[in-house]
Image 1: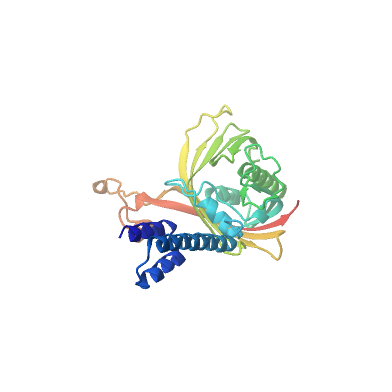
Image 2: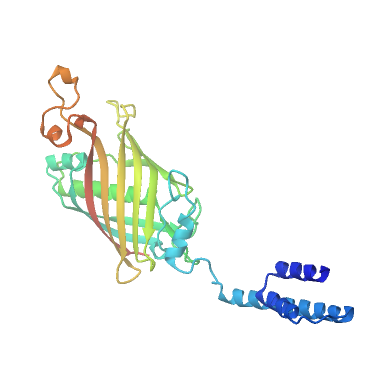
Length: 331
């Protein structure tokens, strides 16, 4: 009985089917063994168990992948899985072939955003084509962006948000001024602050004393298994401080919500990428103010109220801007 208990304990520790099988066969024999035979049996059993323990480990190691992330999609999902509670992934991660500088052509096809409506009022008609540069760097390039255009380890990429924002804004300002010289010049960007270690906050100061802060509050993204298609969504809170009459910051800040949806598709090679972007900005609230004092300003009888009811004054007014994007590799 003691011998059976010891052998069963050894079989559980080693945990190999071959060991358990050998033990079962020896028990089914039913013959009475001497002490010497029992010792021999134990030695043979342990030798078989050791052999059985080695073989599965060898087979297992030969079938394991050499890298935990074999495809671009797996690499991106592995990094994106390290989510921040309430926010999502720390950043939007792109396939490795995004790394580098790109000549980017944007065609702003339609918009009801106040910014473009104001341009339309002074003669700037959509669509507008804007050509600028964009840059993507390895996600582990570090704060100082060392070797930003090289990706020897083929790791996922992130967007250089400061570079991309400044390049697009400057190109848009120049295009508007070139085509419609009678319009008021857009203030230039004086300083821009962003770091890949804190990618959720982008701060800008303009030459007229105004400023803006863009803070990502929630994001999600997905990539196809072959890494050729990518979708991302970001919710943002934008705080804009207008300039005062003296040309310095000091106006009353306005805070509004924003959401940007982007879809990317790889072209015929790693040197061409196509994209579609839809930007939603909150422009206050909709609703009709009623002239009836009994309603105490809650809703009204206009077109908006007829669609959404008496509480329409609290309905968020979202304005959208649609843009087609073509990226061609520069380096």
